[in-house]
Length: 181
Image 1 (cartoon, one colour):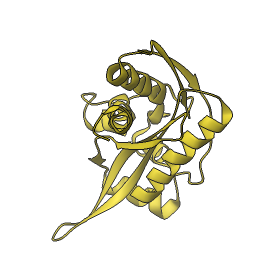
Image 2: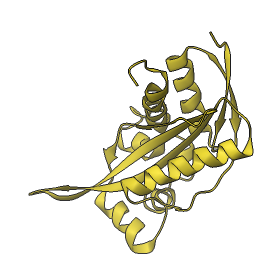
Image 3: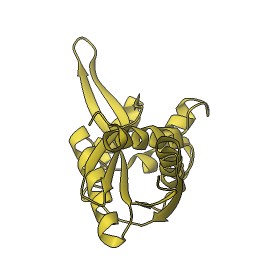
Image 4: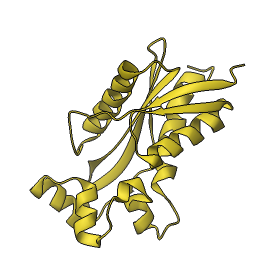
């Protein structure tokens, strides 16, 4: 059994680092050395599930290109629209994790998702702003993505962004670790 794995996390965001490390420790049952790597993606604020997935994969690939690790992880948050007959469009915030192995196996996981306030979604799409900037303008909270996240504010601190990252990465690890794949 492997006792230590190296994980390149495609971000310097402490929330993404902690959530990823927790998932690897829990799912693999090993010690983890996290190597944070700052990368950029082709989309600043993903606003479709396809864009969120694309950016998560880009992050993982760029982290793997930058450093040799046992695993490369990209976590991307974004918004997608759920069209519900009789209720209209509901903007949903979600986290997607892409995990790449040394042998080029890719697995994806999606964490718990939640609706975002319509006025915030409108500001994002109308003014082409990132969610963190909208939260700063509307709620006066800076760098929310590096702390409890919008989910933390909406839930009164009962659910934190790190939890969403943890579950997205944990779900992605199932595709690599479960004998059923």
